[in-house]
Length: 239
Ligand code: ADE
Image (tube, rainbow, N blue to C red; front, side):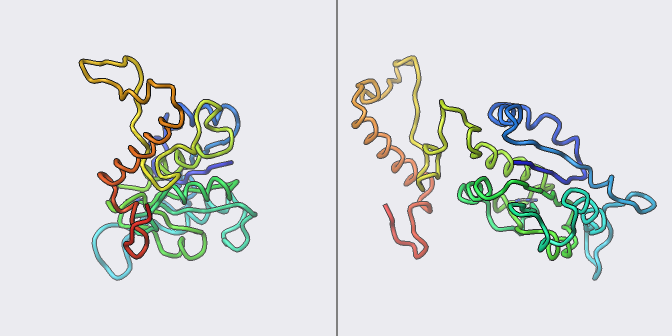
């Protein structure tokens, strides 16, 4: 997979892709990440990337021209109808559909080239959405000061799902959300820490009993922290 990030703050991404699974995936050439400064594509007098909103109001709006020029540079076209296959252009904004594990999985499965546009200010000129963007994504119901943090979240969640990214010792199949439940609790040594004991079943070597315990604990955690995950679309209980 190739990921291109468009931002007015390229320095923000300094080392964020240099750790753990993401670093390993990059070194193994499972993914490459390129960060582009939108300002490099602003060819007006002051290299402005934002301007006042038509119709008045507070704040500034990101101008379309530099973003179109950046996408043209990366994809060779400014019409989403003409993008190469398995290419997705995503705009990060609080107006987007909410990012979930299933969205990360779909992007990991179906995309070879992912372009992440980081919105800033009061918003991005809507013509970017109309012509360039395949999907607008929000990472949650809160407003960040920009799409950069969200782009890191999306890139991280997608990269770790790419085949081979996790390595043999871990698997995404046991992740929270992969089966609609939160992950179960985990313990490591010591078996007794300050009088707090690891549940006996985990020390028993009985794999069937351990699996049963883990499922029960996952259900318990989900019921307590995220009841919404157990409710179907019409509010009925699935598990
Ligand atoms: N930009 C500002 N807030 C955001 C959010 N919640 N998700 C994605 N991009 C954003």
